[in-house]
Image (cartoon, rainbow, N blue to C red; front, side):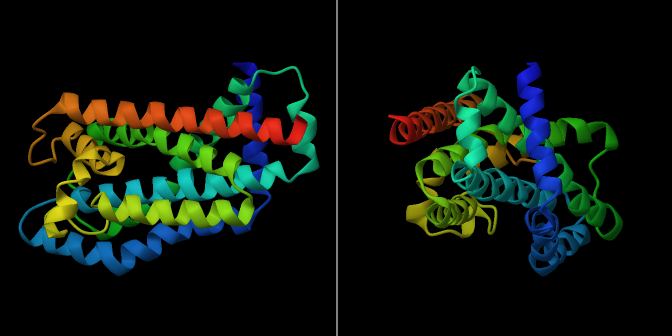
Length: 251
């Protein structure tokens, strides 16, 4: 556990020295919320509903941006760094490095939510009781784990430029098809039949259900099963990509 914490702290220090990384991660969700979310939150307030219905998809959107796009780019860039080659030969299990990087990403997610939540509190009618905030944010954070594994799989499999391209494509597809931009009911019928198999759709549905804001959750075992299945798949892809990279670089 000590090595996991040390690895996470090292990544946090690296990030703090690169404003080009963390400034967009903090401001990007605010811009999107200002363009799309605030109007929807105002409309919900007129019919007596709280803005948590709107804030939740934006929290998930922010989380996907950090865990898929930013993480994959960071992993791919680290592979080109000579220091990474020195780390690879240290007598440490790969799992410690995986866990440390994932812990760092989860912590960075918490920080990236602060500006969005402050904006929501002061400009919208956020009706969720403070006692439910730990459950709400904890569910979002826990649900970020499979997407962090996906980000690592992309970063270890592709070079930096390719990783950014693949990550952005998957990020936008998962966000759009998962109903983070528009409600699923507004998507074409053919797509609506597929979304129940996507991790982003079930992720959002589970978070809203946990805080009592989902219309229904007809099959909780299905939702949890889908998320677990995607987590296992992404973990296997990350492990295979890491092993492949080790084989290519070190024989």
